[in-house]
Length: 137
Image (cartoon, rainbow, N blue to C red; front, side):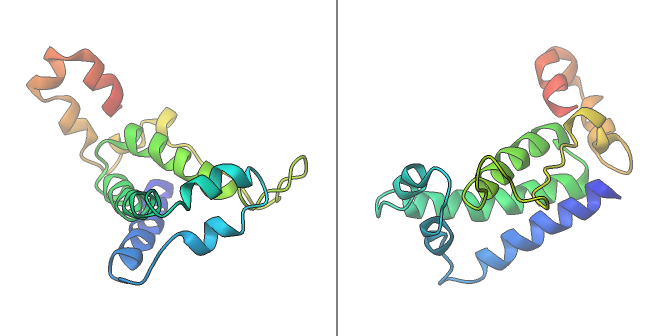
């Protein structure tokens, strides 16, 4: 249930950004309290469109992967990195926000329960490339 719930959260956030042509990460990035230089770099006019694209499609694809139960390990790590990038600007070190918890599903092989990961790992390509099997879960 946790995998499906987090998948829906990511998918919904990504789709709402995709269907809103005026959406941009600039407003969020401009309020960074931690590592403001890094987030100011992300706001450069030549970089911001790439950040917006990666944000919208990253959220959508991570959510789809978690809901479908395929590439869960990869989606979990990508989601973890994305959530860290979301939380860093709002945290005030050394006292982080008590509600800023990050959940990592990669270690639990969550895609094998009610997901497509078990079928995907059994494919012949995974037996030829063991690293791919490890990446998938």
